[in-house]
Image (tube, rainbow, N blue to C red):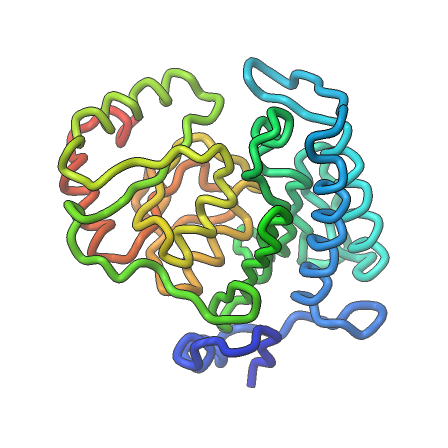
Length: 291
C-alpha cells in the first residue's frame, strides 16, 4: 500500500491510485520525498522573504523576463539541500543548466515563481520544488512564504494546503466562474489570448492575472479560482501545479493537444471536467486555441 505523507487527504484519491503508483525512495537521512520537498521550499521561502522589499540585483533574461540575486541564492539553497538528500536524482532548475542523474527521478525547481512581482514589491510569489519521473510529476510543493501556505501533493495521495486536503472548484457553470490566466513571454500568443478573453467576456464572472503561474495553479487546485489557462510555460512553472490540480480532482489538459498535460506541456487548461468542457465549447474556433 502506498505510504502517503500528506495528512488528512481524501482516501478516495489514495485508494484509487495506490496499486499503480510506486513508493518514492526515502532520502539519505531517512525522510520521505515529500518531506524533503517541503523542507527545501520552506527554507528557500524564508530566505526569499528576508530579501523581499530590500535592495536586490535585477537582471534581464529577455524582454520583461527578470532574474534577481535572490532567485540565485534561493536556487543554491534548494539544490544543495536536495542533492545532499538524493544525490542520484537529476536536476532541472530555472536558473541553472540541467544536470542528468543516475536515477529515473529528476528534481524540478523554480526558486522564485513570480520574480517580477517579487522585484516590484508585490507580495505574490512562491517557491516550487517537485520530483518528476520522466515527463510525469510524482511529488511536489508550491510554497507561498508571504502567507506561509504550503500546497503539497504526492501521486496517488491527494493534494493539501497546510496539511488539510483540498479540491478544485465544484462550480458547474462557466457563467459563474472566475478564470485565471497570465500573459507569459510569447507576445504573439499573449495577444491572441487577450483577444479570446475579450470575446468571452462577459460570459464569465471575471478574470484574474496574478503574475505567478505556479501560485495560480495552486489556487485552481484549492478552488480559489475556478479555471486557469496559459500558453507559454516551462517545466519549473508547472511541475507542482500539474500534480496539485490533478490530485485535487481537476482535469489538466495540454492546450494544444487537449490530452492529459505532462511536465513539458507548454500550455495548460485546468479546472473540474464540467468547466473545462464548457470553456472549450465557449472558445471553440479561437486562434489562441490552435496556434
